[in-house]
Length: 113
Length: 115
Image (cartoon, rainbow over all chains, first blue to last red):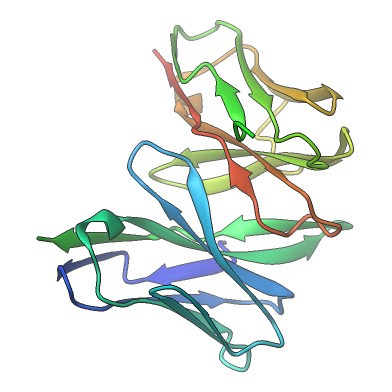
């Protein structure tokens, strides 16, 4: 099963509104990352939050992490049409002597002009 | 830096043919990852290397898949023989991180269609 599970699977809002996406995970983590993927392109790193951090900001992005609930949220404020993309959370996972990033299924965000 | 470079961007082949996907990571990065993305299964990690050595290949679907990293600037993912269920977008990513779970830099992907 996926380590990170995003919800909602799809979100459609009007330009200027805020968009909130959530990610839940199952096992303990060292850090959690959020990535964006535009249609037909590769993933682009947005922000990394460590397990000892609760909140982090980057421009119009705000990420929170609640390790007790094993969940994270990504807030995009004052959304723009260019924010239309899929957003993925990724958590580090240790298995079989190796550490790696595991991605969720993503949230498809559509910003309507 | 040009970023992670993948080739080909698109490949259409027939079942049974050999497919080779190529990746040039960002110079100086010591981790290289191969992911596969499909609508049904999302983004799956196939294999990753550290300093050209395969660390975890538990995600490689079966023996038809193989990956190599002969040097720090080049990696290949080979499928032989290919099957229609291998149709997907294959991403290469590189990273500079002591633990291999830092920020990943992705290429634009290779879209494979097996007929």
